[in-house]
Image (cartoon, rainbow over all chains, first blue to last red; front, side, top):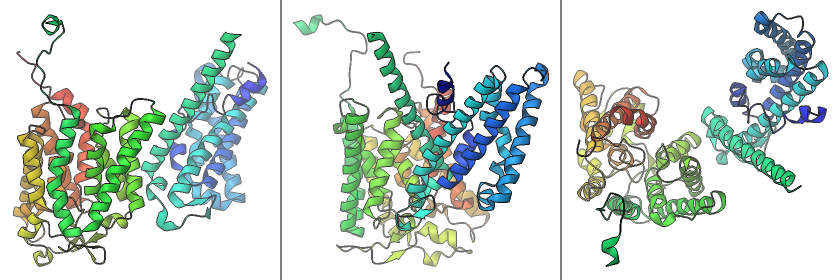
Length: 206
Length: 321
């Protein structure tokens, strides 16, 4: 697998939340506004990148039998760091994301990439994988948050442009999250399948 | 001669029922209630119903033609029934664009993504109603006062009987419409649900045509009667009488037209009874203890979700066994 592919596969083809359906809880919970989605995506990307690097570097040191607790300790370290950083420098974001920043520890994406990728591959590849997955997660969060914020709150990144009489409230509530998540998931899968088909058709013609 | 030599598998005897026939019969059965609401709420009823039916059929056509790439089947009337039931479930002064969104949700979210007619687990009209109730809480609970004159009736608004019941601490029947008015439809509410008599005429027609069986409506209404009656007997100063519960809100409309939807209700007669009882029980629980004054749509949707389970437990009797 080429280096570029390791990086880009997380964007759409193996998008963690839309294709692999990991990390559904933050995907549904923090996507009420684009700002929240960006903040959550950035925090998760940082944790993914750093934990992938460290776990990959330590893969020969960590005993196989206790690897999950070790991964969790590593992940929790980085989550505590990013949690304190956000509290210190962007208190508004910390207030609106609340408990979901500490909860990155139990996000399936982070542990999933550690298990599936970082403990078998080199440090460089793991870093690219973590970065790609993090960016893919951010893309999906922002996509969902965009639809939800525009339809539900009539605004984009906090700038209201639709009068509040025309807001469809359900989209900022939990049921709207499930609806938007499902439809975007279907759309992205459809597009990914279509691209795959085209690629296959091309290589067969050759 | 050719006809005699045809070899085919069973069944050999067909009834002349078809989807079209059933759906247009349901539309016909809804006409009495439609006429009564025109009498009470005037022109907006006609506009809203036409918009709702038109939008549902249009969305179904567009989705089938351009997204699913199949032959459009809008002439089967199922979209028209959905549109009509959806319109019956809203206040007569609802802004039209909200109803258009409701129609889009009914067809584009509740029906077509599952595969269209026959595959939807939830009643599309009710999904759209609940969607609108959550999205537009103010517009969906501002009820025009029924005035038996022609013209726009959206000048005066008032609460529904169930709304009064939920708001007031003590039960005060003097604020409530009389039972005669409840039967005829002289009370606040979604415009299709107000007249019990007109709805029962329609339901009777459907039962006579054997399109719906009596099991779900009777189980539903009887459960509501018994369950609310128990509370009424315990403390008549705090809980309304069972008759009040049956004739207000959407019980008759829900029990006869929504819960009996062939796609989203159990197949076996015994399962239908369980389904109806569940709907009735949940409705009264929501009405008495929930935060919403009316629970018919929620209870039917919850029971819709349980239909596969009910079908597993209550299988229809195999023919000739």
